[in-house]
Image 1 (tube, rainbow, N blue to C red):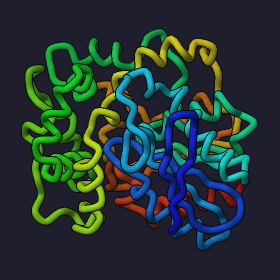
Image 2: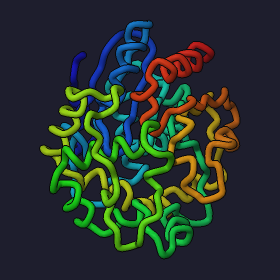
Image 3: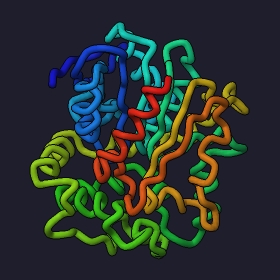
Amino acid sequence: MDFITVQNGAIELNVAISGSGPLIVCVHGFPELWYSWRHQIAHFAARGFRVAALDVRGYGRSSKPREITSYTLRHLASDVIAVIDHMGDGPAVLFGHDWGAPIVWHTALLHPDKIRAVAGLSVPFRPRGPAPFIELARSVYKGRFFYQIYFQQEGVAEAELEADIASGLRKIYFALSGAAPHNKWLEPKPPEARLLDGLVDPQPFPGWMNETDLAVYIAAFQAGGFRGPLNRYRAQTFDFAELAELSGRSITQPSAFIAGERDPVRAFIPGVDLYAEPGIACSDFRGSTIIPGMGHWVQQEAHKETNAALEAFVRGL
């Protein structure tokens, strides 16, 4: 594994790279790192691909601007393009997980000539609606706790998470995993609750993430804190204004979707299965893979199954 620094204006991006051949760029979500793609980097580098996995701005060893407006999807997509341009091996195939999925979906929309194909993990593509998702969440979760609403007030979630980073990360990773009670993440709580209230700190942690793995994440967030990662949630209203020209647009590149059967994202809107039609706004959709028994961290919890689905997708391009 090699690491390079890619410059995008004033932003420095830490990027892990391995292998040679057609370019794959991997984009992680919250609260993760390039390291979330360790299994995919090894797999695809060994099979004739050049793999680049970045620390998204706000995370790890990448720049952490303070302003919320620095974390819009347009800015984050420009970081992905900076990596592709630096590598010089485009157009690229994109893999994105959690917030990384909206980032890669929108990179494909905003920079279609640079993107060969795109696979979203855990979060399917949804075209721009009549209002930002956070406004829908305020309506749907009125009178009860929802983590994205809790994240909106600057400093509150930061203080809670930074009080004990090791315990907080273990609780978050476990609650969203397939090993936790189903949809523990969405368990009803009063609106004044905090994020970690009621979440379990498992000892030992499930085998898909060992102590060495956990230590990588813990060290990164102890060094960099949570403001940058949380600002992504706060930037959603800015996205809505900035991306008006994308209204009604579909993903035209070859696309695929992969997720865990027990992922709480699937139930974010009560009574709606968000994984039911993941290709509805993709004009060249190559299929959906829902992995039984797995939760949100699908490329780590079920890396063999995820790698098989991703390889079938890229081999078919």
